Amino acid sequence: MVLYLIGLGLSSAKDVTLKGLEAVKKCDSVYLEDYTSKLNCTVSELEKQYGKKIILADREMVEKKADEILDKAKDAKVAFLVVGDVFSATTHADVYMRAKEKNIEIRIIHNTSILTAVGIVGLELYKYGKTTSMPFFEKGFEPETPYDVIKMNQKNGLHTLVLLDIKKDLNRLMTVNQAIEQLLLIDDRKKEGVFTPDLKIVGCARLGSDDFLIKYGTAKELNEIDFGEPLHCLVVPGKLHFVEEAMLGLWK
Amino acid sequence: MVLYLIGLGLSSAKDVTLKGLEAVKKCDSVYLEDYTSKLNCTVSELEKQYGKKIILADREMVEKKADEILDKAKDAKVAFLVVGDVFSATTHADVYMRAKEKNIEIRIIHNTSILTAVGIVGLELYKYGKTTSMPFFEKGFEPETPYDVIKMNQKNGLHTLVLLDIKKDLNRLMTVNQAIEQLLLIDDRKKEGVFTPDLKIVGCARLGSDDFLIKYGTAKELNEIDFGEPLHCLVVPGKLHFVEEAMLGLWK
Image (cartoon, rainbow over the protein chains, first blue to last red):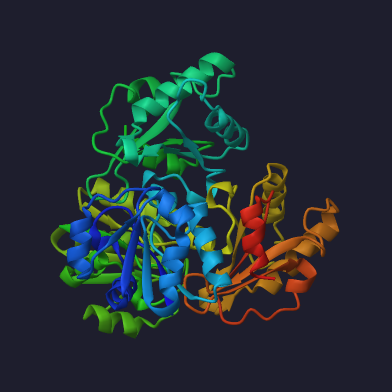
């Protein structure tokens, strides 16, 4: 019948929209995709709010068993809940296409995402370049992509949002400090001066929630700060307008 | 006491979050900033939903008379409603800073924005470069910035979101067709082959609402299509991944 793709926003159960809430309440089955991001509330809080049992959809289920979800949606109303906005991950485009192929009606209910919640930092959203993400380094896997993206954006005077790795299955969520250390490591290796201890950057934690924390300072300074609970992210400012400069002053 | 900055999302009154709704209901005064974007519902629908009188804040009020709003927030609960997400326009950073200066408590309630709602097109949000906006050309004012931004993003293989001008006071909202014509005009003048009649682009209307329209084709083809009611925007794809290519195929 219908597949609802519903964004849940970034933090509490109450970040869902009225439209989203009404849709979930009508549904026969409710799935939650929570491996690409993470809310600050429990699944049981969500279940209580919706008055529905929630089925957790891990990466394997979404990527390999999407047909199970879609087949249900042929004859019933199914909600697929996504943390942040609906199309924050490629996977969801894939779900959308497969539903289209099966002639299932799809309704999309948007919500906020870290890509715009980061606006609170005070850097104009229009002036961000490509977004990048920093994975946990492992032996033989130390990708320099985030460094190269920062370099490209810097060259064009643009800001860079660096999203940090989430390994939910291992309960590992990258901190601002870990990201800084990995970027300094790459700079040490490449010696291009893109990300040095003196570079002024913005460290963020829990954007989208009431107890967010933002700090502006050099990489070296921010590396001394404990940003507390996840999720964290990093912003590397490009060329600053005076209003942007004034906003950053609030987080010194 | 408190200034709530609340995002309303993009389309209907029900796009507000539960958290946003609860906040507005507690407020003594409610302002709506609606000159940088536009909802698909009326102010009286909003007033009915909230059970509150809404004061329209036009550009002059927000930019010059923000003190009136802020002074109220010193002793009362004031809501400042913004279409889209809260920090979509620089003006709102300014309101935030002025409130901070006056030691007013500020709460931010995020929502979706065109910057992430455009994810439905199927191009990965991480792979968009700088965003640009296309103003209505006037005699002696035909800026080439949008063209140059597209060129820069193309060079880096990135997608470009082109937002289209909103002149609310004149009731003029730019269409996909007008934007295409202006871009072709610039290309005609600069002859850099960045935006030609054969360039494959994406035209969008009413993203975030249930009756959105997306079309993928050459600039020439899309220029023949009537996209209907506002708001419109344009996406110029960069280098395509095969999943992105498949998603674009849905809108041919």
